[in-house]
Structure formats: structure tokens, C-alpha cells
Amino acid sequence: MTKSYGQFCPVATAAEVFCERWNPLIIRELVSGCETFNEIRMGVTRISPSLLSSRLKFLERAGVVRRIEVEGRVRYQLTQAGEQLRPLIMELGIWGQRWARSDMSKRHLDPGYLMWDIRRRIDVSLFPPERVVLQFEFTDYAAKQRFWWLVINNGEVDLCRTDPGYGVNFSISSPLKLLTQVWMGDRSLKQVLADSQVQVKGNATLRRTMTSWFTLSVVSDIRPVELDRN
Image 1 (spheres, rainbow, N blue to C red):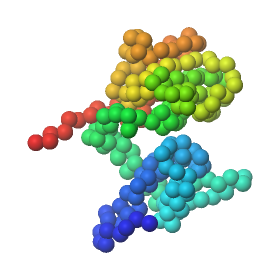
Image 2: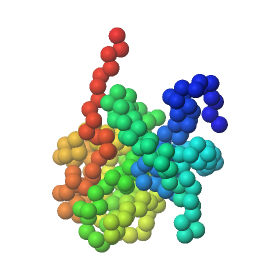
Image 3: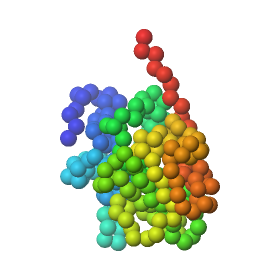
Image 4: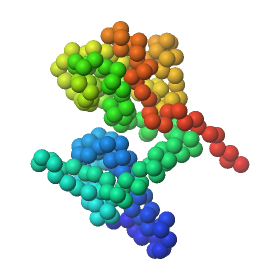
């Protein structure tokens, strides 16, 4: 339970709900279309299952999230109050991209979250209707987090931590930091491909159109502003 600020000010009471650690990221995932417990965990990779469960219950009590059952599966949805946080989440992301940019040090690099964001942003309309398997290799990571797969089939995208067992149509190899910089708009995808800093193999059409279907972060076009610290 969040400690109270002890003020009637609505900024204070709203902060008691929204600013509890992990809550903004959980709400971000719900805003982005996640509905199940496991989907939310894929986007908030460093939270424990027990803590996520606790935070979801807190957000339910606060009237931000509702828990429903659909065909025997538990799903979480934003309430009317939660939906009104949608523009706040978007503006917070824009503000962070402009004024509080990550320095891309190792503590901010997260292959799981990068792949989850790629999975939801990739433009499936540019893929054929038959199954396509993309393999991502982070060349500077050990085996457990080195390889990831996206399976695209009939407009649906699945993220796999283990080899799905299908033939790979297209592979992308890169250090994690470099691909994250590309994803966030700090490096040009076209340039790192031309310089072979990001290595790709496989289907020629997918290579030719990669700058179209690899859609980049929703805030990738926001340029950073240097802070005047004087």
C-alpha cells in the first residue's frame, strides 16, 4: 500500500495511485493492449509474479483496472478511470524521450522488453499470409538471452524465448545496445544495415523492406533536448 502524502490535493491523491513503483509500467502495458497476466509480465520483465499480482489488486481497488474472465481465462482491462490515464502515459513517454533519455548503460538495456516492443510494433500488413519466422540474435549476450524469435502468421505475432521449431526465414544479428539505439531513433536503421553493423540474412524481400516493417518505437521521432544544468 502506498504511503499517503497526507494532503487533500488531487495531485497528491492521484500520485498515491499512479506513482507507486511499477504501476506506471503496468498501466503502460494495459494501454498498449496487454490483457493477460503473462502479457503484462512480458512487458514489465523485472517484476516478480507475486508483486505483479499485488499491484494489479491495488489498481483494481483504486478503480483503475477491472479483472474479468473470458472463456475461463482471467483478463485485465482499464476502467473509465484507467482509460483517462492513456494520454498521461503517452505524454510521459514523450517527456522522457525528450528530457530524460536513457544513457543506454547496461542497467537500462533489456532484451526482453525490446523484443516485446518490437513484437507489438512490427507492421504485419507487410508480411505474406503464410507463416514467417524472424530470428534475433544479440551477439553480446549469453545463450539464455541471446536468441529470440518472432513467429508471424495471418496477422498474429508470437514472441518465443525458445526455438519454435520452424525454419527461419530471416535473421537479424546485432549487439543489444545498437539495436536498442536503432529502435529508439538514436541510430539510423538504413545506415547500420549499409555499414553491416546489424547483420541480416535470409529472404531478400524482407531485407529490402525492413526499414518499412521494422517500425521503431512509438517515440522514436522525438529528439532529445540537452538540459541546461547551470
